[in-house]
Image 1 (cartoon, rainbow, N blue to C red):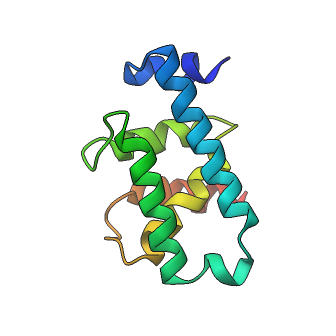
Image 2: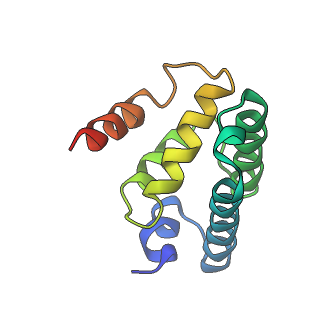
Length: 114
């Protein structure tokens, strides 16, 4: 199933928008993976990484009101599950409210224990 079918249609994105969002998410994932382990655990990196995520999704109409739905949907896809495990902890490491993304975070913790 394509990203457009799996994610884009769910959020009423055109095929072009879906392709652009997917490319941005892949780049974001690669940026995280290329950073050193010590670096990704710093509040500075976490803030910058989460801010990049926000900037990439804002162009497609995502904001604090619907970002959680996007992350939940992405976490439910095999391809983007790992990316979500980078985004949510980065939000928390940057000082974000622990109540935000709580359901996804609990699901991530449960999945790790299996």
